[in-house]
Image 1 (cartoon, rainbow, N blue to C red):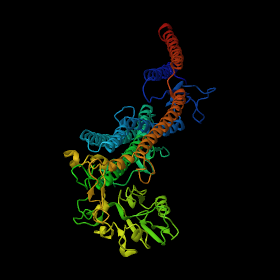
Image 2: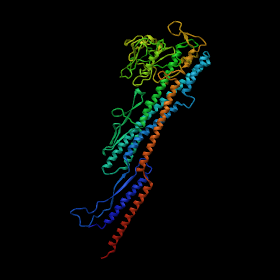
Image 3: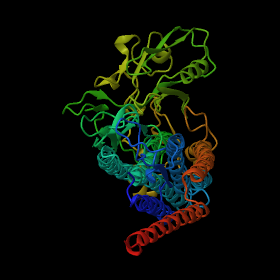
Image 4: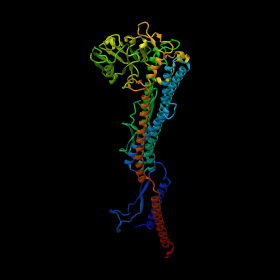
Length: 635
């Protein structure tokens, strides 16, 4: 028999379910502007009826309903949109940081100001042109010295700015690593709480939202992949390695790399293996530090080295008003102080390698002359583990054709005729970064081109070959120590300055050329006062292809550096804007699905309010009926 109070119990359940619905509405409205919050939805279902089929059921027509209950409270979310947003967040984080830092580099070069390297270089060349006209004037000489000092300071300041930015980015990378670790720990802790909540049958909607928000923020730093196939273990991967596995997480570490100026590499903390980083903010920072800015510094070093070497090569041949010769205009900072270029490359306490940057021949040549000899030039392997680079020549080849052939191939050197018509070989920046910068690796000639014709090597064949992997290799050169240059110190642009001899004595500026009075093909006597021919040769580098190997003037080369940087900045801006548009579209889609609508929530509130009022009225009616039954009926 049905209970007398059955109706009141059904009414009570009606109050409870609609009150729960109002609580959900309250929660949605309260979190309307909460970051990462997803709209929650309540679902009702009819409770199990009182009478179900069975041998013991009462013979009562139909099933007696027990009212409604809350089936579930779920959040409205689309995992496909979430995954697309994570992916695009990584892209946007990458391009935002890339564009921002490229813009900073552009500002470092300060091309909008008159105080630029290009302007200082222009003034430097003009001062030499004026010195050619007035070689004995001390005021003109002072201008040459001051423009040289100003240019040197501009270049070294440019290096300091780039290196400081590189160092700041390295610090930012270390901060990002700690942020990743913090996010991983929080995600793992939330996953543990979520697992416990799910095990007792709850839907931890707010915890899910918090975890998804953390993963989304994490994806802006580093590209991650989420795997939800196992309900017991929520997985977050970086590449093929897991960062979070359920309640466990792995830490990342920044490990200093001595081969990269001590900057940190991103490693897994437990086994020190490299982290495979895709997109995201930290990928942009690593590329900016190790590629973009590193290339800028390499190009500035290349610019500085060629400028310093060419100006000094001419200046050493000239004479000052004090009749001194063999003096550098710019200071040279060598990798080793050993006069034979021997260097402890492996850091084992003894010299192991020969560090030579440039070697010049002892004989002037006619570039259009047929050499009348055949052979092969061997410049060693292009890559550390590769095969030797061989350049063949025939008797009908001219000197110019052989030079062009050397420069068209990745030989590790560039060939050119210097200001005295002698062939010089100069190490360049290697294509393979495993090779050492500005080091001639190997020179060998089976014929007479480098031996008898140009006077670079003493002997042909392997016996006369120069190889940097052994010491005392400069003995293989035909010329003296004046005919080769030792590899400069790392980051020469940091050390650029006018030589101390020039700073102390203006008369040491070699504006005059000399003559050979002894027949040893060395200038040993000045042309005297009033001669500015040496200054004219130096000034001529303003219009000549001073950037050996790039076939460009110094101004053209520096302009190309700025041009490539500007182009990269514009490309980054375009990618950033496109990614931002895609991101906005995805966020709008998610907001339309998961966002809280004020109108919808107010409509639901009215619906639940009416349901609550109806249940309350039902209870009042039943209460009145029971009151009549119990208190007003008499025997």
